[in-house]
Image 1 (cartoon, rainbow, N blue to C red):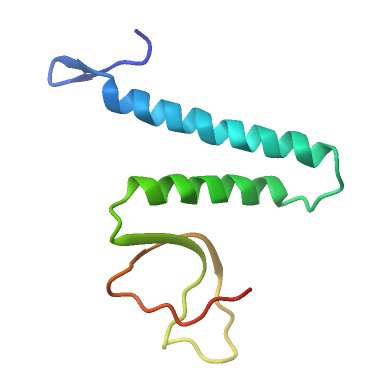
Image 2: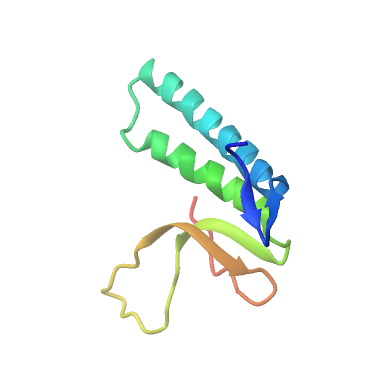
Length: 105
């Protein structure tokens, strides 16, 4: 089979098949967003936003529930008020020990 990996002399496909199915699901959502965006005037970053959201959704189901997955800004005490914080498309954080300071609408 083309979708098989060798692991310690044996063929491992179960995990690979899971990831392949999830990849196909994410690409399907992306393709749907692409088709919808072609019919309308949309921001050029719309397809990327859909792809990022799909990846965050998948990652949140894959990781242990202790971890949260979001996008946004990471606030640091080391930055001055004049410094701009960069936007991150994917942030993985410890839900038990990471405070959420605010949510922008």
